[in-house]
Structures are given as structure tokens and as C-alpha cells.
Image 1: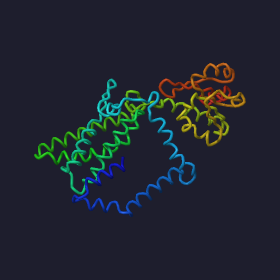
Image 2: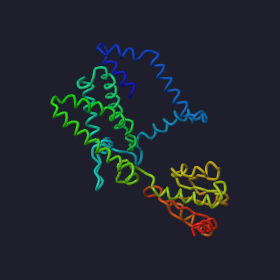
Image 3: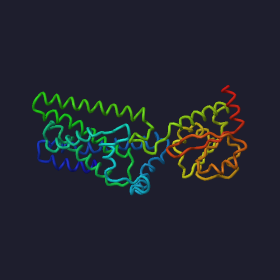
Length: 335
């Protein structure tokens, strides 16, 4: 999208007053600086600050995986207008979500960029680049059947930048001061509306399914599970003394590896997708299981463990088996 936008902008600006500026912008030293910056960022971050060189290849190989997933197989297949549904009007009683102001201002910004009115001539090439870049990205993500809310971010950030251009252009298009004041007031009200939605989405409804950005979201219950494991870790005498097994079908255990990373660092946790050999479970102080393994667990672990339940995400409740002796020691600390 960036390459396409660059070429279109180049063609639009050639022969115009901004053409020489565009020609200067593509001199070899600028292209070299661009590539050098990209290379430094790629190597530094994907090698985990020069400690994991395999990450450089993984950053490329990941695209093979996403090319296979892009056909939208399964529950992630959505209609072409899915993203616009979220952006323009999403109703989940009693809430109505809308970022229509961003879309409307972005459209105004695109018109201003292509028309050349309402923005300074020296800023026109960048505005045109943003307009074409955003349109190409939006079309690409609309066509791809595989859709999730966070996949809007690549083109939504373009819309937001373009909306800034549109806001300035609308004020300049208004000839009379009173009209300008009305436009500014409307934009300010829209900004406040977006702010209140951001507060709801980020805090009060951060894990609520009425939030359009909550999609396969981790339950807040995972924080309770994490706190329980930390309490048991303290009772046991540290992560090294708390061997743990996580057995979840289809490896659907994320984000447990993140929350239980202290056990991973100590080499005291295993993650599996199928019921393991009995020797693997022998000595485990904690065993976390997906619900479909409950029957096997009840048969084999009932004697020496107590059980707690924690929600992982909608429809998935994990069962955590805690060694009875460890549990009794923990309960004494609560007395």
C-alpha cells in the first residue's frame, strides 16, 4: 500500500510546482536512509536485542502462515462490511459504538488532498500519499475474508491521520466565522464522544463482550488464577518447588505462558495438547486442564488434589488441580 501510494503521488505531483520537491525526496541518500532505518529496527527487535537470531527468519516465515489463514476459514470469516459495521454503528444494549466522525473526516481529508483545496501546497504530497495509502489498505483488508477487530489498526491509523487533514480542510472551507465556529464545535464534540468511548472500551468494558473490540478475549478470571499460582508459589518456596503441567486441547492455553512465565523461567512447567503419560504428571503440584479432559482428570486425580475453576475466555473454563498437601499448607496461611 505504501509503495502504491508513493507511485501514485509521484505521478500526481510530476510537472506541478511540487514536482521538484518530490524528485528531491527520492534521491538515493533518502532511499538509503529509509532502508537503513528499516534494517536497524528489524534486526534489533526481531533478534530480541541480538539474543535470538532465529527471530529474523521467523519474522519472514510468519507470512506463510498468514497467507494460509487469509482465506478466512472457520469462525474468523466475515462479510466485506464487517469493519465498517464496527466503525460506523455497533449496537450492544445499552451501548451504541461509533467512530463515524473519524471516517467522515478522513473522507473530507481525502477529498482535500486530491482536490488540492483547504491544505497548504507544501503539505499536499503527504496528504495525497496518506489518502491513497489508506484507501488501498482499507480495500485490501475489506477483501480478505479473514477478519478480526484488531486487523483494522493498519488502515484505521491511516484514517486517523487523514481525519486530521480533513478537520483542517473543513474549517478552511467554511467562509464565514460563525460557520467555522460551528465546525470546530462539532469536531470538539466528536472528539469528546471518542474519548468517552475509549474510556469505556479500555477500562470499564475492557473484557466485556458488549465492547466491539472484545473478540475471543481473555477473561478477567485469568488474573485470579495467576494470583492463586503466585500464592501457592510463595507457600511452596518459589517457582523451583512448584512443578506444574498445563494440558489444553489444541494448545489453546494462551495467555497462560505469559502469566506463568516465572515457572517457565524456572523450567518447572510443561504445556501439552493431549493427556500425557502418567510419569509426566507424577510429582506435579498443579495441573491445569481444559474442560474436555475433566472426565479423565476426575478418574486419575481425584484422590490427591482439590479442584478450582477459572474462566479462560467465553465458553472455556479451565480446571486447576492443586495437590492436597500444598493446598492445606496454603490454607494455613489464610487462617
